[in-house]
Amino acid sequence: MKARLILTFLSILSLHITKASEPLGFPIIADCLPTELYDDTRFAGIRKAGFNAIMVWPKSIPNIYKALDMAEAHRLKVLIFNVEIEKRPETIVPSIKDHPALWQYILADEPKMKRWQELYDLRQRISRLHPKGLCYINLFPNAGQWLLDDIGVKRYSEYVKTFSRIEQPQISYDFYPVRKGGKVSNNQWYATLDEIRSESQRTGKPFWAYILCVPHGPYPMPTLAHLRLQCYVNLAYGAQGISYFSYATPEPTKSLDFHDGPLLRNGKKGKTYKTVQKMNAELKPVASLFWQSKVTSIEHRKCINGEVVVSHFEKGGKRYTCFVNKSADKNVTVGLRPNDHLLRIRKNLKTEPVKSAYTLGAGDILIMRDK
Image (cartoon, rainbow, N blue to C red):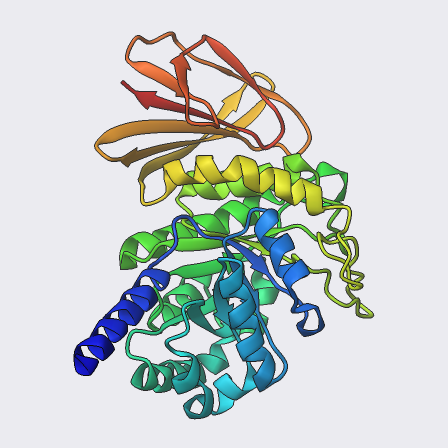
C-alpha cells in the first residue's frame, strides 16, 4: 500500500511538471525585471499587463530560485540568464531543470560572430545536463554595414544562418523602427524582416520579434500606434512571439537616457504601463489567430494616402489576408472589392460582412478570411 501511494504521488507530481512545462500559446514576453524588485506586487503587475512570460537576469543564485518561484505563483514562464549558468551550468542547471516555471535558458543577447563557438559549447553542456532543455539567443538587426562590420560578418544572412545552427526552438531578433517625429526606418526594418523570415522558412524554426516600449535617445515615448505598428507588422510577417524591451526601465547610462518605461526604477508603474497593458489586451486575441499559422506571401501595397503591408496566411484549412498600415502617425484607407466569399475578422475575432473601404489608424491591422 505504501509503495502504491508513493507511486501515485510521483505520478501526480510528474503530471504537474509535464503540464506546467508545456509550451505556451502565443508568447508575450516582458524583458525584464531588476533583481531588487522580485516580489509579488511586481510579478502580479506583469501578469496584469497581459504578459505570459518574463525574461529574468538574476544577479545571485538565491534570486534564481526566487524568480522562478515568483513566476510560478503568477503563472508566468521564465527565460533566465545568470553568470553561474553561463560559466558553470553544472552547478545550477540540475537544481532548476524541473522547475515548472522554467522555459528557456538565455545564452546571449546580440552576440557577435566571435562568440559562436563559445555559445555552441554552452548549449551542448546544458543539453547534457537537461536533454529536453530549451535555449534562447537574441540576434542583432540588419542596421547597416557599420553594424555588420562590428558584428564581424559581411552579410546579415550569414550572421543569422550561423547562429541558427545553435540548437534553439526559435529565431529571435530586435529592431526598433519608430523614431522621434513619427519617422519609421522602413528600409532597414523590412530588410531585416525579410532575412529573418527567410531563415525561419529555411530551418522550420518560428521567429520572435522585439518591440520597444521604453523611450531613450532617438526613440520617442511610445504611443499605442507605435506599439501596434511593431506588433502587427511582425505578426504579418509570421512572428510567433513578441518580446517587449524593456518592461522595467533600464538604468540610464552616459549614452542611453532610458526613462518612463512601464515599470520605473523605483518599482512604481510608469507612464507607458497602461499603453502596454492596452496593447497586450488587444494583441492577445489577434495573436491567437496568427499563432501556428503559415504565411504564404507578403507584399507592400500603395494606397491613395499611404502604404500597407499585405500578408496572406493559412491556418486550420482556412485562408486569411491582413493589411497593416505602415505609418506610425497617419491613417490610411484600404479599398476593397465587395466579395461574398470574404468575411472581416474584428480584433475580438467576431466576423462581419466586408465593406468596400476601411480607414486604418496608424500601425493598425485589418484582417479578412475566406468563408
